[in-house]
Image (tube, rainbow, N blue to C red):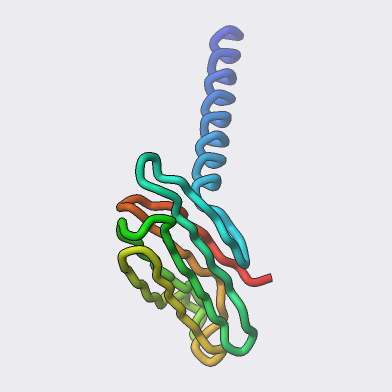
Length: 138
C-alpha cells in the first residue's frame, strides 16, 4: 500500500511538472510589450522586421508594421484590441493590412468606447507567422 501511494504521488508530481513546462512554452510564443521592434529570419527567404506600440490616455492607439529586407515576399499585420465596454463585458475591435514588402496598420478606441485591456498584433512575412505580440499600456 505504501509503495502504491508513493507511485501515485510521483505520477502527480510528473503531471504538475509537465503542465508547468507546457505553460512556459505557451507564454514564450506570445511576447508582451508596450512598444517593440523585433526581427525574425525566415530561413532561405529573408528577415522580417516587426514594430508596434500602444499610446494615449483618452484615446488609445495601437500601431503596427511589418517589413521585409527583400523587395517582395508578402507581408501582413493584424491588430485586435480587447477592451472592457461600458456594460462590463469584454469586446474586441480590429484591423489589418497586407502588401508585398512593407505595410502598417493603426487602430484606436476612445474612453467612451471602453477601457483598453490589451491588443494582439500578428505579423506575417514570407507566408509564415513572424511574431505574435501582446501589447499592454504602462
